[in-house]
Image (cartoon, rainbow, N blue to C red):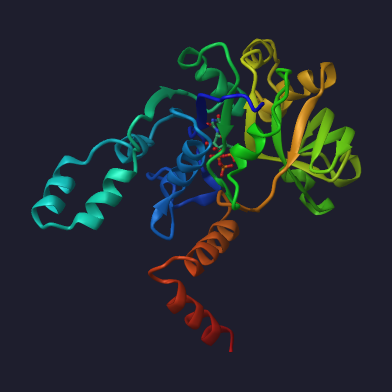
Length: 290
Ligand code: UTP
């Protein structure tokens, strides 16, 4: 039976420097893919997986995220007055009923491992999901749901994986494979951003995880890793070397929306499927290419 996961952590305190100047005053997570901010895609994925508690690890300049999941009294009153019921329903659907939103701060961006540690006071002693919002995964089955389906009796971490090319290893955590069964693997180690010739496999870690509460003990004992930051990969490596980490080769297509190219590609692909603009965008692109 799949384990029930009750809470998801969204580390959104990073600086988003690859996306300047857009991210100078606006959170990267609020950049829209067509008409929906990236953060909302991630929250919807967690809700679809049955998760009811969303914990955001925020930092300076991130207030727009809190406002997005709050009610917008003036806007809603105005839409109701003008009887724009469709738009009102869209505004209401952003924060689904029965879902709690919790905010904790990471005052200095000391790395992903440290950001997750900041969420500890908001969690109880059970496994939780982590979603990196700039990894947008387009799939008929949500990525977090795919990880939940891989839960077994153990408390081993579960991580999302994708096949990568040698030129991409410097941008990924890469696993060592102990066992492999179809789309599932057991990782015996992880290294952060290796050179192509040092990469132990062609499987890179993507931004979806189910972590045991025990990860906090491991993170707390870690020395600073690459770039002086506290890296989640280093904590996962400790658990991988001890008991193994479960990896799931995710179905679907991932867009790295923290990069300009990935962001533009996602806007095109989601735009082509959008009921309002899809057809027009398709004919526009056809003309552009001719
Ligand atoms: P990234 O390094 O991809 O994001 O971290 P970034 O720092 O925002 O972007 P660049 O590299 O400067 O362009 C992966 C995820 O971890 C979060 C980020 O918000 C992002 O979702 N993160 C990273 C934190 O919350 N805190 C940190 O200290 C570091």
